[in-house]
Amino acid sequence: MQNRATRMVASDSALHLRSLPTAELSADDVEAIRSLLWSAFANDEDGAFSEDDWQHALGGRHVIAEREGSIVAHASVVERRLEVAGRPLRTGYVEAVATRPDHQGQGIGTAVMRAIDSHIADAFELGALGTGSHGFYHRLGWQTWRGPSFVRAPDGLERTPDEDGYILVLLTPSSPTLALTDPISCEWRPGDVW
Image (tube, rainbow, N blue to C red; front, side):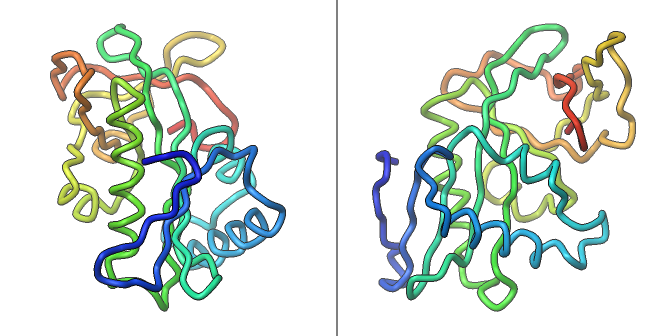
């Protein structure tokens, strides 16, 4: 997807997608995205959206869906270094995926994720995300990582067994051959490491 390009979703001429880096988000964009994310995750069974979650979504590329001048969906992808069986991979990690509840089921989230997936395919060796919503991502080509998960913490490698089965990956044209049962690790960060 071209930088700052506006695309129309074929089925809805009133829906526009914008793709831009964090540095180009306006103050109004940030306010609207934060409001969307906090409201979308307010009743989430895994807990509400946190300030750490917001910080994890910054520093990469955002895809925003707008309808009638309002932001109705968002996702971002940030660069992380995941290691598979000790091999470092430049990874596009997906964060802060949400669609306003009154706009769900209309293909908007799918359109946003297709744009994110395209960016990952063009720019990274691997895509990754953590979720309990496997069905949505599986139909877009994401696969569940079946191997054990770890975090590279300040004191060394630590198991993250609660994340096993919740990590999904998207293979890209530059992905090496990977066994989805191998150990996978991420770098430590505040909040949810995955």
